[in-house]
Length: 79
Length: 352
Image (tube, rainbow over all chains, first blue to last red; front, side, top):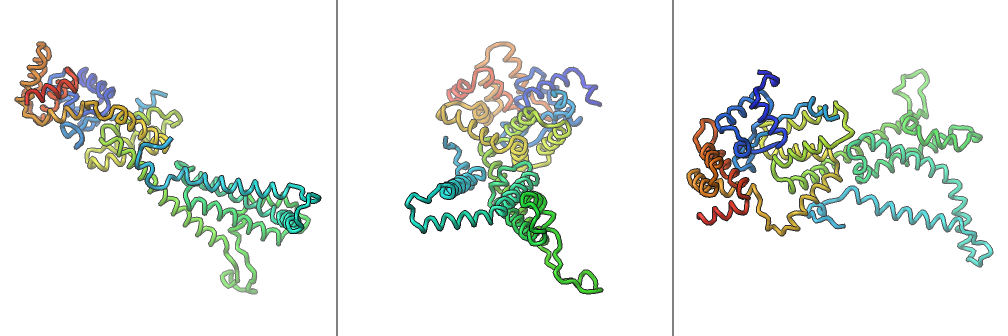
């Protein structure tokens, strides 16, 4: 699946993450209204697409961190 | 204003070290200039002082071309340092070996002027010679001075002095030592940053902000830095290494003054609040330690609205793939977001 073929929920989740920055998965589950099962599935799919990274973080309350991958084109568009 | 950051006081501050020597040198020069320009004849000054002044003026007259050439050589050295260490020019100039390099350039330029004076006709304009040697001494110094040439022999049999080789070796040594000194300095600054921003999350957010706030980066530079940022948070890297990489990236993007600012601003709220403020993360971590069933009961009791009840129940339902710790943390986070960190902590304490 290409990034431009994302469904609306995936786009919403990615947009939320872009605004929030790096967050623990628990924060994403608590602060978005997606059902946990769907949210987790979307996180996994988006990570597989390389649109976000889920990495270990001992300082996070659940030991993990979800980080959106900013694209160069997005960063350049601010100029 | 003195920094409240203890690590800022530890170790050498490369930006402050330079100023003392400079101030002393300026004062000394001013005193010497005042002595030389003050007319002492007819003032009843001791003959010894008059003789010293006359001799000093003559000496200065003879030395002035060398001083000017040395000054130009030092300027060339400064430019060379700024170019080689373009990310940290001030720190490179203030480093001990940076100052050696500037002196090396000044002395090499004076030596080149001495040699040039020997080989040029006496009527050559001093100003022209000073300027050409001052700016062109790096090329002149690399000239091989052959003082005895073997007739019909190969070049290798000539007797020559290769001053340029010596100059280059010492220059290389200086640059290597500056690099090492700057490496330690960078590590010190990164450690300060890591002392203030302890988590990958905080460091990442700061790095993203810093990257977005930089106005002079070209598109290529920004793309390269974004690549670096993404490599820094690679899931394969351990958290400690990711933190170091992010710290170094912030330092490279924002510079030392920015790191100073971040370290100070981060230290300020803790000092003013006196540690009384309840941190959301700390409370979430505290609540997360409880069993999921206890947390669910606590959240359901504290949040009576139907929407909250439904959400808490949904968060507590077992889902394949979601670790239990994430479920506990998400319920804790939901509760803290709804009632506030202090209230959540109080409810948990009451529940025991």
